[in-house]
Image (tube, rainbow, N blue to C red; front, side, top):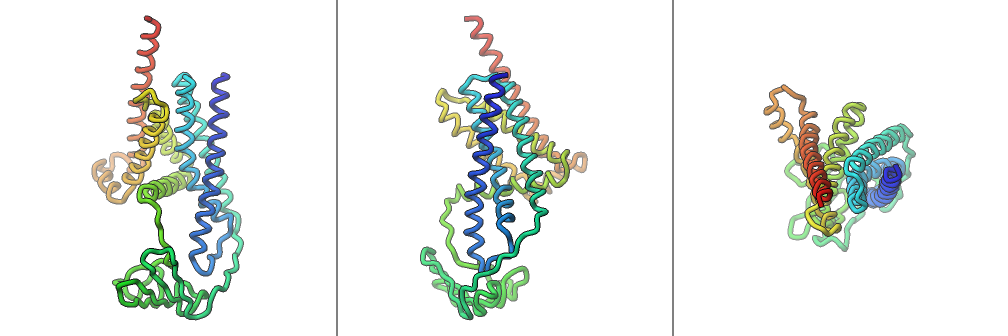
Length: 310
């Protein structure tokens, strides 16, 4: 019981610290992205905090499981005890945070007054942008999505009457509100997208009901716990940690790939209405996780018997 209490405390503190830190960093990132749109959109800080928290919840879930199980391996905790404890804590903490975020969404957003930055002919440019693209807002900051002229190096000037859902000329490129560059490495950008899409899936499952959330999140946590405890290819804990991280990022990418419209159509045609498509991914997670858990348990039993013989 003492080991379970230590593992529970360690996991809970890690989850809270990671969730709070990542939420704060993501919130600042969203504020920067928000500032690129002129004038500011009528959204409250609470709206941005909720959006950041949903993104952070997905990352915190993966990170906390990874750190807690590696901690259990180093402390030589009983595998079944460690896995069951982490699974239960992961599910109920993530479910509780999701419920709180859904309740906070009912709070009406406060209106944010836009800062007047310029009149007609306002030129927006970024000296740090490598392509030196510039946008001229013909009606100024009062209509950031209104008429504009865009200057791209090496190309003729582009005039757009408006941007948004309906374009005057669909052959013209869709341009961002403000031409700020993005120098984020492709690998990190891909992981960020996978985390966001995974957070959207968790949010959707929560809205569908407790049973739907239990099936998806439970099978996902079950798989993550199996990989986090089973990958011990070397005697170096740091190398094992990075291998687990790669495995977890692979699961993130697999969720994004499997939930793509093309894969859902292929899965639906393969199942031939014998099974709901929404259950296909949880069954894959549960089946693979069960195999890995069984393998880990057999390895643990064989080692115990070998130690007893000597």
